[in-house]
Length: 297
Ligand code: ATP
Image (tube, rainbow, N blue to C red; front, side, top):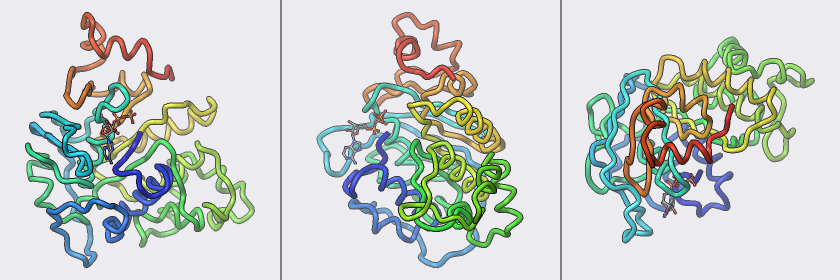
Protein backbone atom coordinates (compact mmCIF):
# COMPACT_ATOMS: atom_id res chain seq x y z
CA UNK A 1 0.00 0.00 0.00
CA UNK A 2 1.20 3.46 -0.74
CA UNK A 3 1.59 5.92 2.06
CA UNK A 4 1.90 9.62 1.18
CA UNK A 5 3.77 10.88 -1.87
CA UNK A 6 6.25 8.51 -3.39
CA UNK A 7 8.82 11.00 -4.56
CA UNK A 8 11.80 9.80 -2.53
CA UNK A 9 13.03 6.80 -4.42
CA UNK A 10 10.40 4.22 -3.77
CA UNK A 11 7.79 3.32 -1.26
CA UNK A 12 10.08 1.08 0.76
CA UNK A 13 12.52 3.88 1.39
CA UNK A 14 9.68 6.23 2.21
CA UNK A 15 8.31 3.78 4.72
CA UNK A 16 11.67 3.65 6.46
CA UNK A 17 11.70 7.41 6.57
CA UNK A 18 8.19 7.54 7.94
CA UNK A 19 8.94 4.99 10.59
CA UNK A 20 11.88 7.06 11.71
CA UNK A 21 9.83 10.19 11.49
CA UNK A 22 7.17 8.76 13.74
CA UNK A 23 9.79 8.15 16.36
CA UNK A 24 11.25 11.60 15.95
CA UNK A 25 8.81 13.86 14.24
CA UNK A 26 11.13 16.80 13.90
CA UNK A 27 12.38 15.27 10.67
CA UNK A 28 9.06 14.55 9.10
CA UNK A 29 8.61 17.73 7.16
CA UNK A 30 11.99 17.39 5.53
CA UNK A 31 10.69 14.11 4.17
CA UNK A 32 7.47 15.31 2.70
CA UNK A 33 7.22 17.42 -0.38
CA UNK A 34 3.88 18.75 0.68
CA UNK A 35 3.91 20.37 4.07
CA UNK A 36 0.58 20.69 5.82
CA UNK A 37 -0.35 24.26 6.47
CA UNK A 38 -1.93 23.77 9.83
CA UNK A 39 1.26 22.91 11.68
CA UNK A 40 0.76 23.52 15.31
CA UNK A 41 3.79 21.88 16.72
CA UNK A 42 6.44 23.07 19.06
CA UNK A 43 9.99 22.05 18.28
CA UNK A 44 11.12 21.21 21.79
CA UNK A 45 10.62 17.68 23.03
CA UNK A 46 8.62 17.08 26.13
CA UNK A 47 7.11 13.91 27.51
CA UNK A 48 4.25 12.55 25.45
CA UNK A 49 0.88 13.22 27.02
CA UNK A 50 -1.05 10.01 26.70
CA UNK A 51 -4.26 10.10 24.76
CA UNK A 52 -7.00 7.52 25.19
CA UNK A 53 -7.17 6.63 21.52
CA UNK A 54 -10.72 7.23 20.32
CA UNK A 55 -10.75 8.10 16.65
CA UNK A 56 -13.58 9.64 14.75
CA UNK A 57 -13.80 10.71 11.11
CA UNK A 58 -16.76 12.96 10.32
CA UNK A 59 -17.56 13.52 6.66
CA UNK A 60 -13.90 13.73 5.78
CA UNK A 61 -13.15 14.79 2.22
CA UNK A 62 -9.66 14.91 0.82
CA UNK A 63 -7.68 15.27 -2.38
CA UNK A 64 -3.91 15.19 -2.72
CA UNK A 65 -2.38 18.65 -3.21
CA UNK A 66 -0.74 17.47 -6.42
CA UNK A 67 -4.02 16.19 -7.84
CA UNK A 68 -6.63 18.61 -6.61
CA UNK A 69 -9.11 17.64 -9.31
CA UNK A 70 -9.42 14.07 -8.04
CA UNK A 71 -11.22 13.68 -4.75
CA UNK A 72 -9.68 10.63 -3.08
CA UNK A 73 -11.96 10.58 -0.03
CA UNK A 74 -15.55 11.75 -0.07
CA UNK A 75 -17.48 12.07 3.17
CA UNK A 76 -15.71 9.32 5.05
CA UNK A 77 -17.19 8.79 8.51
CA UNK A 78 -16.48 6.19 11.13
CA UNK A 79 -15.83 5.90 14.82
CA UNK A 80 -13.29 3.77 16.65
CA UNK A 81 -13.84 3.44 20.36
CA UNK A 82 -10.99 2.84 22.76
CA UNK A 83 -9.42 -0.57 22.27
CA UNK A 84 -11.34 -1.48 19.14
CA UNK A 85 -9.95 -3.10 16.05
CA UNK A 86 -11.10 -1.43 12.85
CA UNK A 87 -10.32 -3.30 9.65
CA UNK A 88 -10.20 -1.24 6.47
CA UNK A 89 -10.73 -3.24 3.31
CA UNK A 90 -11.46 -2.38 -0.29
CA UNK A 91 -10.11 -2.56 -3.80
CA UNK A 92 -6.69 -1.23 -4.73
CA UNK A 93 -6.68 2.55 -5.00
CA UNK A 94 -9.89 2.91 -2.97
CA UNK A 95 -8.28 5.20 -0.40
CA UNK A 96 -7.32 2.87 2.47
CA UNK A 97 -3.76 4.10 2.94
CA UNK A 98 -4.92 7.67 2.55
CA UNK A 99 -7.09 7.28 5.65
CA UNK A 100 -4.02 6.19 7.60
CA UNK A 101 -1.96 9.08 6.23
CA UNK A 102 -4.60 11.57 7.35
CA UNK A 103 -4.68 10.08 10.81
CA UNK A 104 -0.94 10.55 11.00
CA UNK A 105 -1.54 14.11 9.83
CA UNK A 106 0.66 13.89 6.79
CA UNK A 107 -1.87 16.00 4.93
CA UNK A 108 -4.59 18.48 5.76
CA UNK A 109 -8.12 17.44 5.05
CA UNK A 110 -10.37 19.47 2.79
CA UNK A 111 -13.56 19.36 4.78
CA UNK A 112 -15.12 17.46 7.63
CA UNK A 113 -13.33 16.66 10.86
CA UNK A 114 -10.99 14.12 12.34
CA UNK A 115 -11.33 13.91 16.10
CA UNK A 116 -9.11 12.10 18.54
CA UNK A 117 -10.59 11.71 21.99
CA UNK A 118 -13.21 14.19 20.82
CA UNK A 119 -10.66 16.89 20.01
CA UNK A 120 -9.82 18.09 16.52
CA UNK A 121 -6.67 16.43 15.26
CA UNK A 122 -5.25 19.79 14.16
CA UNK A 123 -5.50 21.14 17.69
CA UNK A 124 -2.93 18.63 18.93
CA UNK A 125 0.74 19.27 19.18
CA UNK A 126 2.02 17.26 16.23
CA UNK A 127 4.88 15.66 18.08
CA UNK A 128 2.59 14.66 20.89
CA UNK A 129 0.00 13.28 18.49
CA UNK A 130 2.50 11.09 16.67
CA UNK A 131 4.08 10.17 19.97
CA UNK A 132 0.83 8.35 20.67
CA UNK A 133 0.85 6.39 17.40
CA UNK A 134 2.87 3.56 15.88
CA UNK A 135 2.83 2.13 12.38
CA UNK A 136 3.70 -1.41 11.49
CA UNK A 137 3.95 -1.35 7.69
CA UNK A 138 3.77 -4.25 5.24
CA UNK A 139 7.39 -4.14 4.40
CA UNK A 140 9.51 -3.03 7.31
CA UNK A 141 12.75 -1.28 6.40
CA UNK A 142 15.16 -1.00 9.27
CA UNK A 143 17.56 1.88 9.41
CA UNK A 144 21.32 1.39 9.51
CA UNK A 145 22.26 0.72 13.11
CA UNK A 146 22.05 -2.02 15.68
CA UNK A 147 18.99 -4.12 16.42
CA UNK A 148 18.89 -2.43 19.81
CA UNK A 149 18.82 1.04 18.26
CA UNK A 150 16.10 -0.03 15.88
CA UNK A 151 13.91 -1.30 18.70
CA UNK A 152 14.61 1.63 21.01
CA UNK A 153 13.73 4.17 18.35
CA UNK A 154 10.27 4.81 19.71
CA UNK A 155 11.59 5.27 23.24
CA UNK A 156 15.16 6.52 23.24
CA UNK A 157 15.45 6.37 27.04
CA UNK A 158 14.37 2.71 27.26
CA UNK A 159 16.35 0.49 29.60
CA UNK A 160 17.98 -2.75 28.46
CA UNK A 161 15.38 -4.70 30.40
CA UNK A 162 12.57 -2.92 28.59
CA UNK A 163 14.18 -3.57 25.21
CA UNK A 164 14.65 -7.26 25.99
CA UNK A 165 11.08 -7.59 27.22
CA UNK A 166 9.72 -5.93 24.07
CA UNK A 167 11.81 -8.25 21.90
CA UNK A 168 10.54 -11.23 23.84
CA UNK A 169 6.88 -10.24 23.53
CA UNK A 170 7.42 -9.60 19.83
CA UNK A 171 8.74 -13.15 19.36
CA UNK A 172 12.07 -11.68 18.31
CA UNK A 173 14.31 -12.60 21.22
CA UNK A 174 15.25 -16.06 20.01
CA UNK A 175 16.52 -15.00 16.62
CA UNK A 176 18.24 -11.90 18.02
CA UNK A 177 20.11 -14.01 20.55
CA UNK A 178 21.17 -16.44 17.85
CA UNK A 179 23.44 -13.75 16.36
CA UNK A 180 26.94 -13.54 17.86
CA UNK A 181 26.52 -9.82 18.56
CA UNK A 182 22.92 -10.25 19.75
CA UNK A 183 21.28 -6.83 20.26
CA UNK A 184 24.40 -5.10 18.96
CA UNK A 185 24.06 -6.79 15.56
CA UNK A 186 24.15 -4.23 12.75
CA UNK A 187 21.17 -4.26 10.42
CA UNK A 188 20.06 -2.10 7.53
CA UNK A 189 21.86 -1.62 4.26
CA UNK A 190 25.35 -2.37 5.50
CA UNK A 191 24.35 -4.84 8.19
CA UNK A 192 23.02 -8.35 8.11
CA UNK A 193 19.92 -9.10 6.14
CA UNK A 194 16.91 -10.11 8.20
CA UNK A 195 13.93 -11.92 6.73
CA UNK A 196 10.66 -10.09 6.19
CA UNK A 197 9.12 -11.75 9.22
CA UNK A 198 12.11 -10.92 11.41
CA UNK A 199 11.98 -7.29 10.35
CA UNK A 200 8.29 -7.18 11.15
CA UNK A 201 8.96 -8.55 14.60
CA UNK A 202 11.59 -5.85 15.17
CA UNK A 203 8.99 -3.27 14.17
CA UNK A 204 6.51 -4.87 16.56
CA UNK A 205 9.07 -4.75 19.38
CA UNK A 206 9.63 -1.07 18.60
CA UNK A 207 5.91 -0.40 18.77
CA UNK A 208 5.50 -2.38 22.00
CA UNK A 209 8.21 -0.28 23.59
CA UNK A 210 6.61 2.92 22.42
CA UNK A 211 3.27 1.74 23.82
CA UNK A 212 1.07 3.88 21.58
CA UNK A 213 -2.63 4.49 22.14
CA UNK A 214 -3.27 4.14 18.43
CA UNK A 215 -1.75 1.45 16.26
CA UNK A 216 -1.81 1.61 12.48
CA UNK A 217 -1.17 -1.72 10.90
CA UNK A 218 -0.73 -2.33 7.20
CA UNK A 219 -1.02 -6.06 6.81
CA UNK A 220 1.19 -7.87 4.35
CA UNK A 221 -0.58 -9.00 1.20
CA UNK A 222 1.81 -11.85 0.55
CA UNK A 223 2.05 -14.30 3.37
CA UNK A 224 5.32 -15.28 4.97
CA UNK A 225 6.21 -18.92 5.42
CA UNK A 226 3.82 -20.44 7.88
CA UNK A 227 6.18 -20.60 10.87
CA UNK A 228 7.18 -16.96 10.49
CA UNK A 229 3.56 -16.02 9.86
CA UNK A 230 2.53 -17.63 13.13
CA UNK A 231 5.22 -15.79 15.11
CA UNK A 232 4.27 -12.46 13.56
CA UNK A 233 0.56 -13.06 14.18
CA UNK A 234 1.12 -13.94 17.83
CA UNK A 235 3.22 -10.83 18.31
CA UNK A 236 0.61 -8.66 16.62
CA UNK A 237 -2.12 -10.03 18.89
CA UNK A 238 -0.10 -8.93 21.91
CA UNK A 239 0.64 -5.57 20.31
CA UNK A 240 -3.04 -4.85 19.60
CA UNK A 241 -4.15 -5.48 23.16
CA UNK A 242 -5.31 -2.43 25.08
CA UNK A 243 -5.09 0.06 22.23
CA UNK A 244 -7.09 1.20 19.27
CA UNK A 245 -5.98 -0.49 16.07
CA UNK A 246 -6.66 0.74 12.56
CA UNK A 247 -5.73 -2.09 10.24
CA UNK A 248 -5.45 -2.03 6.48
CA UNK A 249 -6.45 -5.64 6.42
CA UNK A 250 -5.75 -8.45 4.01
CA UNK A 251 -6.03 -11.43 6.30
CA UNK A 252 -9.33 -13.12 6.79
CA UNK A 253 -8.56 -13.95 10.42
CA UNK A 254 -7.94 -10.26 11.22
CA UNK A 255 -11.04 -9.20 9.39
CA UNK A 256 -13.18 -11.79 11.15
CA UNK A 257 -12.03 -10.68 14.57
CA UNK A 258 -12.40 -6.94 13.83
CA UNK A 259 -14.93 -4.98 15.88
CA UNK A 260 -15.83 -3.12 12.74
CA UNK A 261 -15.01 -3.50 9.06
CA UNK A 262 -14.98 -0.45 6.82
CA UNK A 263 -15.35 -1.31 3.17
CA UNK A 264 -13.86 1.59 1.25
CA UNK A 265 -14.82 1.88 -2.36
CA UNK A 266 -13.95 4.81 -4.55
CA UNK A 267 -13.27 7.04 -1.55
CA UNK A 268 -16.45 6.27 0.34
CA UNK A 269 -17.41 3.97 3.17
CA UNK A 270 -19.54 1.72 1.04
CA UNK A 271 -20.35 -0.91 3.68
CA UNK A 272 -19.72 -1.18 7.39
CA UNK A 273 -20.35 -3.82 9.99
CA UNK A 274 -18.90 -7.07 11.20
CA UNK A 275 -17.90 -9.96 9.00
CA UNK A 276 -21.14 -11.84 9.58
CA UNK A 277 -23.19 -8.73 8.71
CA UNK A 278 -21.33 -7.99 5.50
CA UNK A 279 -20.92 -11.47 4.13
CA UNK A 280 -24.67 -11.84 3.68
CA UNK A 281 -25.20 -8.65 1.66
CA UNK A 282 -26.43 -9.67 -1.78
CA UNK A 283 -24.08 -8.26 -4.44
CA UNK A 284 -22.10 -6.72 -1.60
CA UNK A 285 -18.60 -5.40 -2.26
CA UNK A 286 -17.34 -7.17 0.83
CA UNK A 287 -18.87 -10.40 -0.24
CA UNK A 288 -17.15 -10.21 -3.60
CA UNK A 289 -13.84 -9.10 -2.14
CA UNK A 290 -13.74 -11.85 0.43
CA UNK A 291 -14.20 -14.45 -2.27
CA UNK A 292 -11.30 -13.08 -4.26
CA UNK A 293 -8.85 -11.23 -2.18
CA UNK A 294 -8.33 -12.09 1.45
CA UNK A 295 -5.52 -14.33 2.57
CA UNK A 296 -6.79 -17.34 4.47
CA UNK A 297 -4.56 -17.35 7.49
P1 ATP B 1 -3.83 -0.17 -2.25
O1 ATP B 1 -4.68 -1.24 -1.67
O2 ATP B 1 -3.47 -0.46 -3.67
O3 ATP B 1 -2.67 0.21 -1.43
P2 ATP B 1 -5.40 2.09 -1.26
O4 ATP B 1 -6.82 1.75 -1.07
O5 ATP B 1 -4.54 2.13 -0.06
O6 ATP B 1 -4.76 1.16 -2.38
P3 ATP B 1 -4.55 4.83 -1.61
O7 ATP B 1 -3.10 4.55 -1.59
O8 ATP B 1 -5.14 5.45 -0.41
O9 ATP B 1 -5.37 3.52 -1.98
O10 ATP B 1 -4.83 5.72 -2.88
C1 ATP B 1 -6.11 6.28 -3.18
C2 ATP B 1 -5.99 7.12 -4.45
O11 ATP B 1 -5.14 8.22 -4.21
C3 ATP B 1 -5.40 6.37 -5.63
O12 ATP B 1 -6.09 6.79 -6.78
C4 ATP B 1 -3.97 6.84 -5.68
O13 ATP B 1 -3.49 6.83 -7.00
C5 ATP B 1 -4.07 8.25 -5.15
N1 ATP B 1 -2.85 8.67 -4.43
C6 ATP B 1 -2.24 7.99 -3.43
N2 ATP B 1 -1.18 8.67 -2.97
C7 ATP B 1 -1.10 9.81 -3.71
C8 ATP B 1 -0.23 10.95 -3.72
N3 ATP B 1 0.77 11.05 -2.86
N4 ATP B 1 -0.46 11.91 -4.62
C9 ATP B 1 -1.49 11.84 -5.48
N5 ATP B 1 -2.35 10.80 -5.51
C10 ATP B 1 -2.18 9.80 -4.65
